[in-house]
Length: 94
Image (cartoon, rainbow, N blue to C red; front, side, top):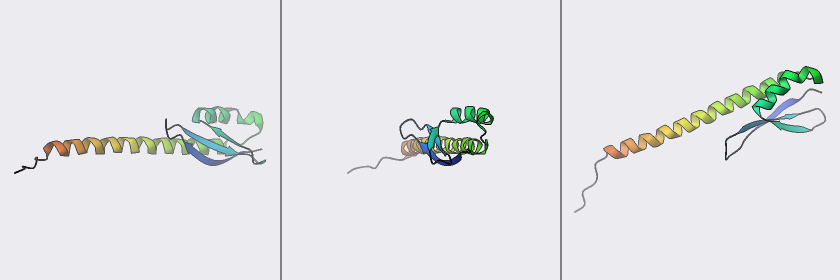
């Protein structure tokens, strides 16, 4: 029974990324990247193909890279805003 990669999940609070795999009997299980790496290493013991595990690991890496970029980009925008505000002259009130 070979699993198929189906979904990516991102926890909103701690930004942990997990992947869901579905088997032929429609059962699903969610794995972290570490769990997927372990399962990929032992999939031959269960007569499973490692392709779904590899695809899920790659997709988790892509999502983690995107989240890192998004966080860094947001930090840069915030710091840029504070630099711009420091250089802006204050209006004179009469």
